[in-house]
Image (cartoon, rainbow, N blue to C red; front, side, top):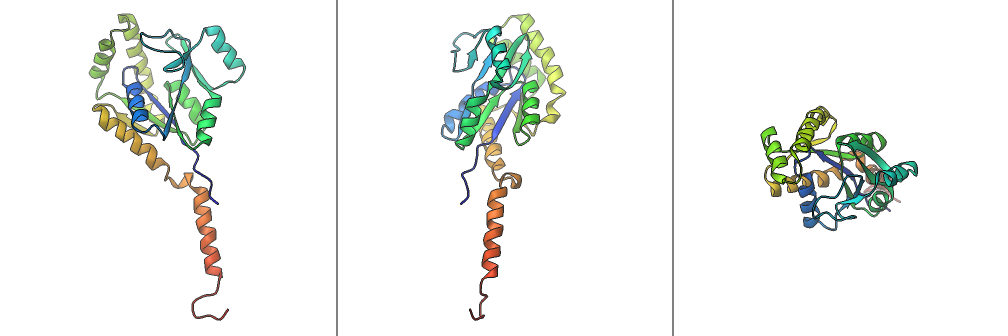
Length: 219
């Protein structure tokens, strides 16, 4: 008997302001039974409207470093002066249940995930061009000029690592972008390397059929 497919661990990264958070929210709203969004822990302060346990688990620096010491994170990284990390238990439970787990994390953490979990699927989200990225960052109205400049400077460095990802997703029209992400993950389930058990079962069944009495032969 072929066991139910495990979920695919999918990492979504992108420049700050690329819209990856908006993409993930709509993806989960459109396909609530298929995907699980892993909520990251962070030491940054909540933005207006953000809730602990929903957008992030907001933790003090001391609490976060205790999680590191307890090996309660599958990855963590420091970004613009704050820690970000992925809690281990939730991810494992959701994958075993057959749900595709989405990790929305920065490039440092994404590459750590790829080293630890070679089967992880890595997607990088970009706006159509750099001018649009700056426009989106400025349009938030939630961060001072120096923070925006810091995020743009960080984007220059992040761009050097895009080649480590499996797919590039351009976030221009939101609905089209969300459907593209869904199609990529759905098609990934059919990759031959992810279907070894199903292929082996077919090979065994064919061998069994072929070893039985052939047409016209006496049993």
